[in-house]
Image (cartoon, rainbow, N blue to C red):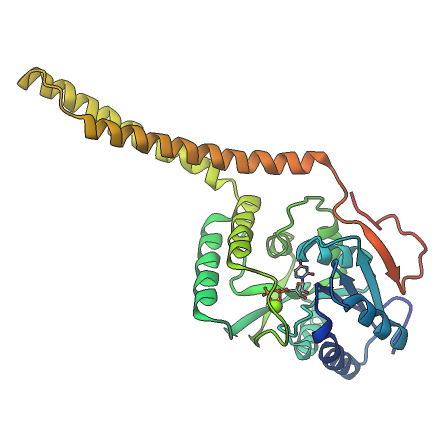
Length: 322
Ligand code: UDP
Ligand code: MG
């Protein structure tokens, strides 16, 4: 059942996912058919270097509700997702990973809850079948994020969620470049609820995230969602100054009582190095925010589209969003 304005838009960012597509589409279309509602599937080719695009086009010709956007280069998952969302027209939008880590079978439950009146139905992972280090770091990350961010971001929740058109329109009003999607999804508010699922291992291929990238992702999440790293120095500074003041009093007192002697080279060095370290750290954190401001004021388009397949409008005003 396919109508011009689909009820459901599925957005799939794809970066070197050629080996996963066959299984993905088989399971996805099977799930969608059982829902018997109209849909579109938008695959965003995020500058893949394998034959992802060629395969996507084969599927597109076979199955027209599958539309393809090809970006001009690799922009990263969050931006690819944004490009897909910008081009979607469904009443509800669901981002989905191409590696089958977000099981399409959960869609039914999401749609059911959406019909009951929820605006956002997010998928929360019950068990992560990943190695202990990834599970541990993920846990730590959500812990820190929960503590630091102004809006409570649900733990173990990825981009896999159903969003009503109202939510999508709200999201589209956010022009920022540093797109920490999980945060943005939560920031918008609306009526949200969870569905739970076991997150399987990636079907085929390698994760695109190295530990270094995950670390940067975590930093990005924190810096783009909180100014606490800037504010915390007020308190650290206050503590250090108080300790220094007390120490100064003690020195004066000691000199008055015992007279002058001049040891203290080690303590001096420790104090100087400690303060140097603290100052460099603060400077680094300020630089991080400054860099972000610089990125934002440059005002470049978020992404550039090279080709689009299956879209009826010739050149939408959102082909590359500013
Ligand atoms: N992805 C993308 N651009 C990138 C990296 C990843 O579009 O630069 C896509 C990828 O094809 C997949 C999804 O984002 O559909 C999730 O990527 P991955 O499985 O590597 O992340 P993980 O599941 O390990 O968090
Ligand atoms: Mg994955």
